Length: 132
Image 1: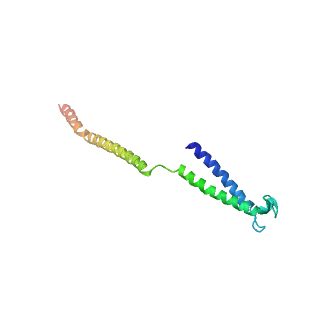
Image 2: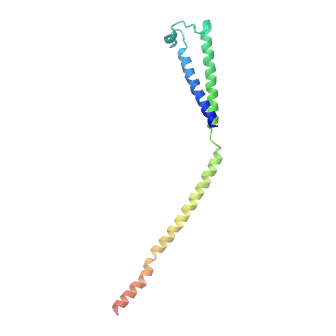
Image 3: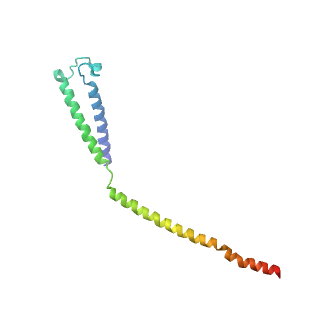
């Protein structure tokens, strides 16, 4: 798919450039930019030059839309349902990890909160031995 996508993209850029140039070259009542390149009466395509340029522009516009459509098809993302399933699984994993962390934190808090109970008998022993 990568090579087809690159070839289509290059063709798309060429089509765009040619369409822009053809639109600029077209001369409508001697007021367009076409007069800059070939003067007022360009006979590059003979007496039917206006129809040739118009037809060529129309063909390039159709090619532009077709190429745009196929580029969009090639770059389309996968099914959103599959992506959502992966996100849901990851979310469940994160929630389970968070619950484990909260449980470990609560156990640590309980252990840390009861340190004084263990220290109290030692303090009593110390005061008893000092009294003796």
